[in-house]
Image (cartoon, rainbow, N blue to C red; front, side, top):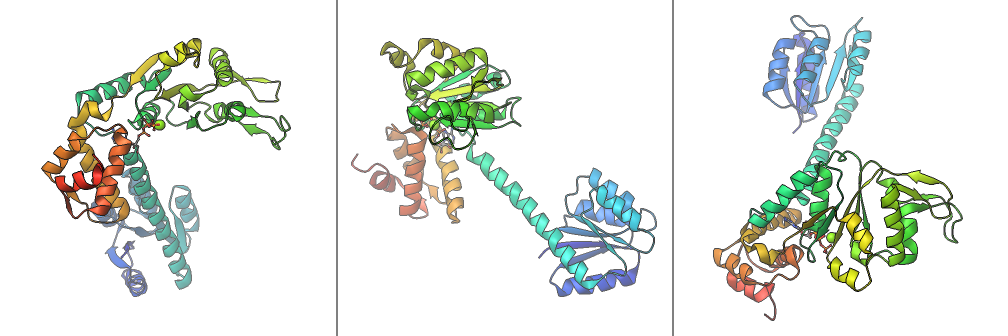
Length: 387
Ligand SMILES: Nc1ncnc2c1ncn2[C@@H]1O[C@H](COP(=O)(O)OP(=O)(O)OP(=O)(O)O)[C@@H](O)[C@H]1O
Ligand SMILES: [Mg+2]
């Protein structure tokens, strides 16, 4: 039930607003002056505040300023009597959600209240989503190996240095790249990701550098490339070891000169992007085999970060299990399941060739197939079939 605070010095107005709004199933609190209103609004959280303008002690506008200062997030609707319309307009400029003029029209009151509450709802939903997203990219683990990675990220992120992240499948390379961007001075600009393995070699150039209209048959319109989209931010070149040699040559040029040219274009343009690259291949081997350019390797690998495999940090398995149990059960909207000590031990005995990705899948499978408390028998039966 949404909670509304009514601040007005006229008892009759408070009473009639209360009656109307309670009839609409809102929960109502009242304050008879600005000072009282301020103290109530700071002590308790309301979904909406209706506030008179002309009041003794602290008037509506002063109250609005104070509420803003205190970071009160509830939308505030001002109520203006005769002769205070200009003040009401000023209040809206200062961040009030809206104003109602007295005598208050019933329909307008209800519409305004509904809209304001809708906004409150959207704001809190956005917050919850943001939190969910940031938890999604949270890096779990207290092992020495993870501490080393964290320390490295802290040191490297604020610099402009290029970073090459290596490590096996699903070990968290992308998480490291995101953390570097988030902790860098570029964090308010975008992080643009390119999966170099997923793009056919004849398209990669246009993907990275963009193209001009008519540059090739399907180029029906001018299109920006990922370098341009990442302007001011970070370009994450994922699976760089799978990039064709011809694309490597072009990327090398872009990195050397900090300039790009759109496909089919003749104008060079300066770009300001930080490159973070990742691969699960052994690039030294690829260089020896002639599949990767050594000069590009040195350009990319100013700071190499190797992400340890899960097998190298099995002491993190209890924390990871708890993290994914909570995350996945919450996603499914079910009560969070637990895993027994023996169950954890069984997980620690497994050879995790697919690293955290495989681990997460196994936890998801166990959640679906097992009861409330997952045991070692469950782990042996479902997690590691055939082993
Ligand atoms: N330390 C960690 N804590 C929590 N979750 C993690 C951690 N490391 C990885 N994950 C999760 O594991 C999954 C795989 O991670 P990510 O995509 O970063 O791996 P990757 O090394 O880029 O994999 P690939 O080699 O397949 O590209 C993701 O769902 C990620 O959120
Ligand atoms: Mg990846």
